[in-house]
Image 1 (spheres, helix red, strand yellow):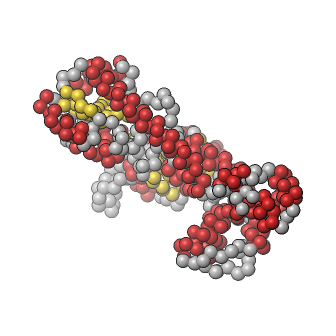
Image 2: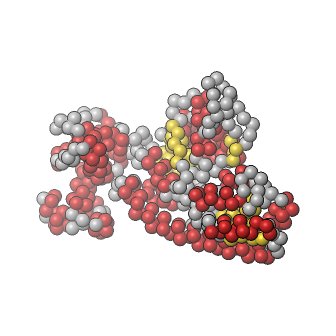
Image 3: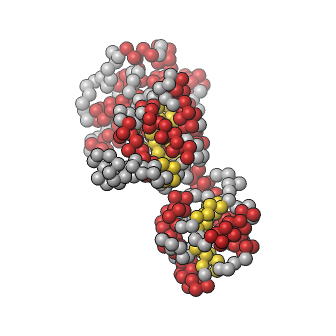
Length: 452
């Protein structure tokens, strides 16, 4: 988080003169103010980790400020709430401070006192968010490696990109073949962002009709169509404050793309059968197998929607292009399957590992996991894969040999925590030969020592 990040003021006051005068004083002092007449109007602006402080009257139409305080603390206990009270409400305000309010101001109050209290609260909020960001950064840099497995240069680049984009509010498009893990990357973007305490809402757009896609995204009211016996919120509302993940976004019906684009631009939606505009605050992550730019050029995807969501991109490599990750991934999936099925994890032989390394993996990581499951259940014979598949020939023999050597060496180093002597014995290679291969393949043993 930037040191210069502005802390906004979410101000709720039902008296127009007080609201306008206080807002003007705060804005003259340099604050950005979102002013509202009721809690109902302001609610959508409060979420976990929001860079803001709340300034709220004790007595309001609908939900009073003291009741809203409890709701805010359940969302983010560290968010400073300043209560504004009349002379007869001081006892109520003091009680609210015992329940977690940051401070209270008694009406009438001079502008300089209001500014001073809000500034102290903003400084506290800024410090809280800064500490949390540093803590999250430390956890993220280690935790993501346990979720997005792989030592290949491609996966290191993907992890670095995820951590960079997670700390921003930019919408993201993830490209990759079927089974490369687009949903996993989208989840990591959410889990390592400021929105991680809110909902992560996935929706697969593949094969959806226009009516179903519209209902799923925007929700509907009672009687809006045949069978709509009750109102239902859509994925946009469910993702409020969090992340909306749209898989196979290239399959979204054209008519729905228009309404989806409008929602992104206006940050509000209307349920089917309603004219009421509902504000939405969510990050959109889209995934596609095909190039959306090319599809837009072919008029198979709206170009204006492409330019709206195409701010940042992550490209996932197919498994055949990062073969050195196969041994680690297969062992990981084998252990998971053994735990899930209550079996002992079988040992992968050298000939079986060679087979895994030679296969083209058209189904990518998803297919590898399927093979690991069947391997643990004893459903496979001596051969783990169908090596007669013509797609194996996607790379030549020299490349396959290099991929295989790299995988065998990195696996030996991992098992022996970077100890070259032990790794050379495990591989049956003289140490000088292993050192030559390490230099040629540019493998750093220190990486494996750090893991230990």
